[in-house]
Image (cartoon, rainbow, N blue to C red; front, side):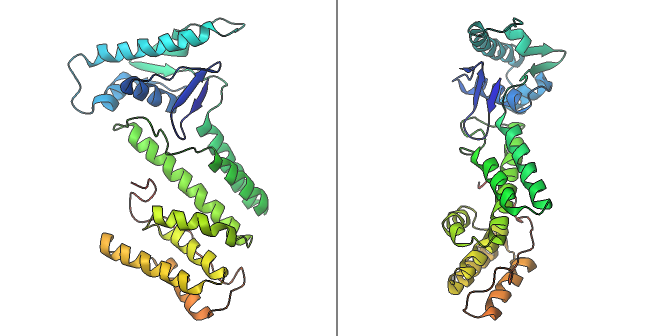
Length: 281
């Protein structure tokens, strides 16, 4: 089974889509796929679908959604040429108290993202920044949009989607940081311009944007970026910029208008202080 979650939901068995079009069956499949090969209690699925006020016949409705998914799985299996025949119930398994989706040895974009991100970090630890940028970029390229962009998210899917988005943002920051270390600041300017617009209170991205601008000889724009972020933080959150970002601003102020060397400035990695920074919501 191949599972794509980093964008629109797409689940395929032997290359055949088993993704339903109706919203709630999609939501069920998304929850099972995100927790593939792990038991998801029926109570968890019901809470995901209806929150704290499920309908009286919630379990019967859920069983009907599972039946619809099994019909799609069965149609896909009918086209397969497995040496060991399987039924839809072997793939979407009913266990005491819940359900389990068997993904087997198929591809999962979430697993691939995590594998490539780990490979990038190991390359960086090994002193190979070029390889680190390559692997981190490959991890980010798996994303085609917001995780589960076309699926309604309830109280269980929503935090898992937020976790994925936060992981993506962490990898993005790491890739930009390593690219800056390699002196490739000019090629980051367009991307960072879009990112600071999307995340207007995200301090790490703003700091990276300031460094890229200053190292490209655009000192005034770097200082203006700091002032914009400070105004937004004070107005929206009642906060001043962090000490790390203020240090970057001071370094730019004292460095003069000339372009600094690649290692003249640094931004200590830190997390954004607002809860919604990672998801853009």
